[in-house]
Length: 345
Ligand code: SF4
Ligand code: SF4
Image (cartoon, rainbow, N blue to C red; front, side, top):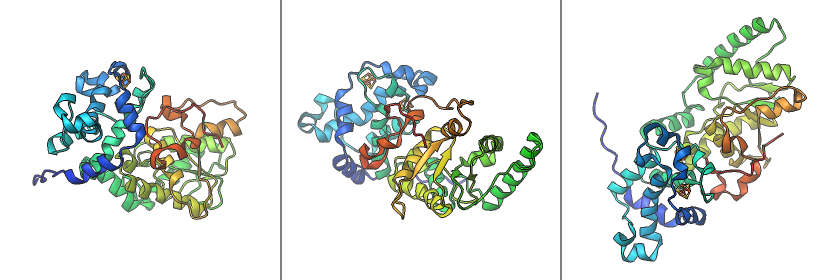
């Protein structure tokens, strides 16, 4: 196989973003870290490899040294005195290794910060700088591009979706002994659109059946869509706002076409992140586009007789739509510790 040419970082563009888009919130976080190291206890990357470079504060410092160089007086006048570094190929490589290579933006570190900071928000900003530098890892870039081009990050065709749903529906009918069970696809006017992680279709179809069973028991008016169903958002994951909006926009447009009231998704971290991008996508009729959790639907229709424990706990399970207006560029940081109110329909 031919070797790929190495990526040449666009240093000028990275510098431009670092200079012009550094928001006060990120700057405050960088200035307030007391380097206590407590956040390391919650970082799954650090817990897995035990390397100092994987500790959240260490990753944050990769951006901090660039921040000090261009945004502080001492950093401009005597950079080595405050450990400030120029933006160049070497520092951008180090930033990429920290922000992409050692962080999943899960947000757990924010839960353990002794002074209430959000390291993932800083790391996310670092990714924004790296997007400008053209240093998004190939795998993430490829997933985002495929989602923009096909409507889902695995390039699953409409025919494959229809075929999978057809056998799942029959299987569910057999399992429940109930021929009225439906897995509707592309049903205009349904109340709920159940959006999917493409991996559900490809590798975990029984999670789709489980959702269908829940909707059936709850007598929910719902539908799947055979196209543009992807609730994941690798554009958001990469901190590439343009790609994130393009991906979210496809699902938002599909929801508009079908005329649903809610998009429901299982709880997975970047599925929720994706839905927040959906909320931001410009909708033609200017409607507030609301997403709901399966658990919320359950509690409403099953009179609280069932309890669904979110798959991912912590901050991600607690995001609320009302947080959106206050976020930089309208995008909720992946890790932001929320006020703990669930988004209910
Ligand atoms: S966001 Fe998650 S992976 Fe990244 S530093 Fe924090 S705990 Fe670790
Ligand atoms: S817990 Fe907070 S203050 Fe302490 S090192 Fe981590 S980010 Fe900095």
